[in-house]
Image (cartoon, rainbow, N blue to C red):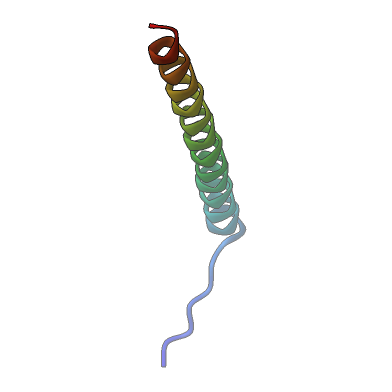
Length: 53
């Protein structure tokens, strides 16, 4: 069994990378929700337009 020790720089680098990945994940979920809302509104507008014709 090898003894692995991480320096403080490596730990900070790992935490920083994890933080960036977490923020990207949160932003992606918000973008998906926004796009789904837009398509929902588009569907409502399309249905409204076809009912008027």
